[in-house]
Image (cartoon, rainbow, N blue to C red; front, side):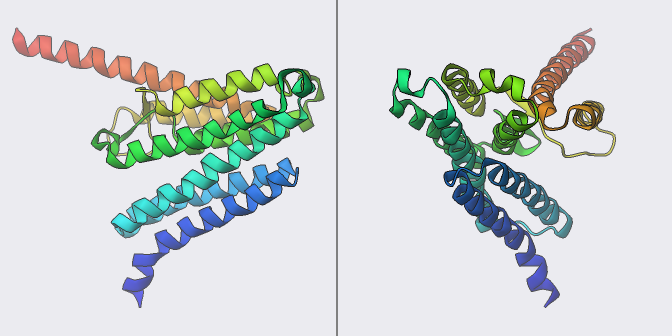
Length: 246
């Protein structure tokens, strides 16, 4: 019995991730973007804990990896696309540019699928990510309805088709970019833990003071710290190789 629970618990958590994404999509297309965003945040929590449970229980399987990617395509691909689609429809420029532009929001789903397919076959991504992880992208987009509700003065900038188009282009590019980004897997005596702690510290402080408006800034800090970490590691490797050649 214990072996069966150990084997299937991570996949069960992944299924809750998928279910949350499905519920979120339903609310998004009903226009309830706040509830849809909460569903995405809940899916992100399940996504974290299914991997955590798999590592703790040492319960890894091919079906678990594929199921996780399928769940993520919906929860962090289709759901944020649905949220963006509804934001496009709320834009006052919708009649000037054309009603079909809003369908470009679903490019997020397409590039998320590409990102996840790449992740499943890329052996470089055991300890790092190449490209922005889909949960991070999804959480950033899900923060927009809260920012609109809590900071009405920003509505003219967020509910703007040009802003939303730029956002779609930038996020799609980041999803598939050859950009090494750190994971949050802490390991003993790993010098990269410093950057992980800094990220968590900045995130906690910013979210405490600015709530959901801090999420885009936290994602920017995440990318910046990852680049600094990469450059520092490369410089250390160069110095190390030079010392060996002396």
